[in-house]
Image 1: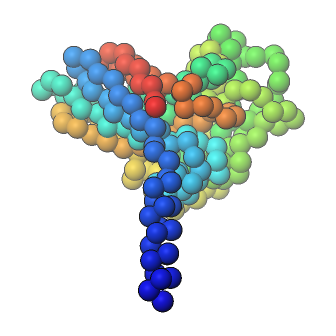
Image 2 (image 1 turned 135 degrees about the horizontal axis):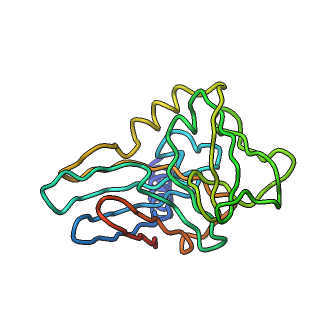
Image 3 (image 1 turned 45 degrees about the vertical axis):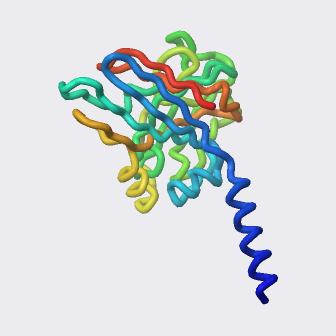
Length: 214
């Protein structure tokens, strides 16, 4: 009995030690310090949120520390997740776009013009039904206009109130801050992307910062 207990404890310790370290990185300037942790694995996102978001989203855990006494405005629109692999860019999604009672219709654009290749509409959000491109599988999904990005319109549909509540409670708070603030941001990039290829870009009132993960 004691031997079995020792084996079970050893197995638990091995499993704990085998857990992958969450990639993280940071950047700072005279006005703001950013520390971010990258959650790309479905199992990791499941532990963080109680749902893996059906594997469609990358979650970034962000901590912002302003460096002066003035109030710093914070918005999810200050952040973009970019991939070196194919130039995809995703703005941070509002929780209601992921699990709310609406459906996104996403038009892919390249260089300010709607792309002619891989035509089709992407429907979502995932928690109300997986996002799929009608008639094809296109290369770009996002939430911000610009090169390799997409623009979204919404119509009404069903959602998941429990997931929406969790995403909203854990999201990076918006508004003005004078001290450290932390929370989650939700991004959608199509396909698999290596950690070394991902870059979190901040373009906001505190200037421009870039976070790489390792």
